[in-house]
Length: 188
Image (cartoon, rainbow, N blue to C red; front, side, top):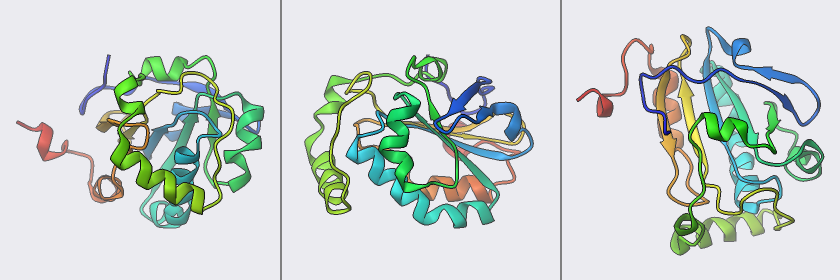
């Protein structure tokens, strides 16, 4: 079941690729951007992590904390996306329990959404991110959740294609919101 704004975000406790325990309780009282990705060697996912890293200081200044979830085992995350050295946790969820809890699913249509995917794939390969072995379903569609300091979903963004993530503008709106009201698009 997909989550929507105003719902209580599912609590979680997981392990990052480098062995640290990452729990939703650690983010109580903070704004959290919980981002779900495909597998660790996905060039599209690595490109997005690269873009987040480039803007990470901006999000940190705005008191938004980030956790990224991958459907890969820890050793595969270390081998691929972990090499980028992101200053936020990369959670290994090869059993995909967090994906189930947050309603993140796969879509064969989203796997072949050509126009957007080709543009992002071209940018990813230019950045040096080459495809590698996949862990779990290739057609997992990314999803992003903005979770307010009280643990409520401020916004949920379920991508339509394997390259579709929440726009950075939405993250910035979340960062500037006092989180006492939900976004206007869901207020109707």
